[in-house]
Length: 223
Image (cartoon, rainbow, N blue to C red; front, side):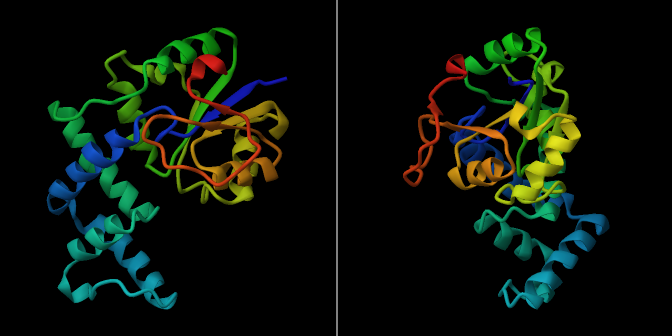
């Protein structure tokens, strides 16, 4: 029996092109405007951790902005970067420069699952703020009314089973009663190892995944 649904965003509820062609360039363009003391302290902590791990970021003396660009170029799932991006996007949504994007089958499925009493939550590397902004500003209206919770990098990496164990605890459900949908098989591997049901999202523009035996869907209408 399924009682909970956990959804990835990029390539699952939302086109990859929206993330890479709209959100990421917008964040890069406006990063310098949002680099306050709080943001720089968080980034410096991650910078020092990179040096300790023998990574080779640009010298901090060249400015925090260059480190931000370096993280962006690597598509690093950095908590400090994701927090900064969320704040940048918040301003963009507030001004009307940005609007959330989801596949047309998403709002229909969310309403159907919600009516059936399922617990729907989101797990994305983007910050919880960024998740809420995206789903509250779609052409289909505010979809956050269907969501009971959100998880981001503060819960843990998406490729580690322990992250999904924490999420199942937050659901207050046995892992086997939760379905996780993602377009990335290594995330499904981790969720399956934690005991969740898993489904591979196949959407236009998604990168090919390694051979696997997971159930796949091209639309939430099939779930």
